[in-house]
Length: 234
Ligand code: ATP
Image (cartoon, rainbow, N blue to C red; front, side, top):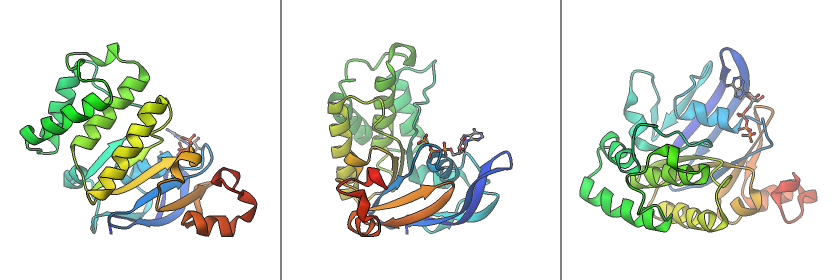
């Protein structure tokens, strides 16, 4: 099991947001974490990547419980946040080198992959640029390139499509599909369901900090027949 979230109660500074959340992402599975604004998707992700600690319950990554004093599990996760977080004093090249060091990557192989991805996102001539020179969408693309060079076993992706141009959305979908074919497991939060429903294996629907339902597109359509052709109507 790539990810097991079991009876997690959590939130911010003792303000509970997640109320007994349980769900799994199996090895090689691509799961869409869906729900309305404020449902608790990013809060769930913040617990999985260790920014927040559950008040109770457990989170297991690749069969091991995440613990504060064991930071090794972080190298098994590639994380793309909803809002790009870059170091103002580091160039694009230095961000890539920092990622390669943090994930103990083979630099020759990682640079080969980085150059391929930089070309796809038209960043290949911007290696010496600082974050201040990038637009929001370009910063998002930098985060995407840094995440995908890691070739991590588990990808946690928070609202990846917002702020990206249609070409970049299409390129990102291709990358996500390729990463799944390489054997990675992926949890992707989104409310761009028209796009996500085309390639997610399964969906977990969160509402008011609780899991409301989960299943394949077909299963959810059966549970919510009024939703018509799109899960947007649930
Ligand atoms: P969106 O689709 O808008 O990104 P979401 O499903 O990711 O929404 P969260 O960001 O997880 O939702 O928010 C869930 C709840 O947690 C909301 O009620 C929100 O107000 C609250 N919340 C989010 N961030 C914080 C914070 N830093 N401190 C306190 N409460 C927060």
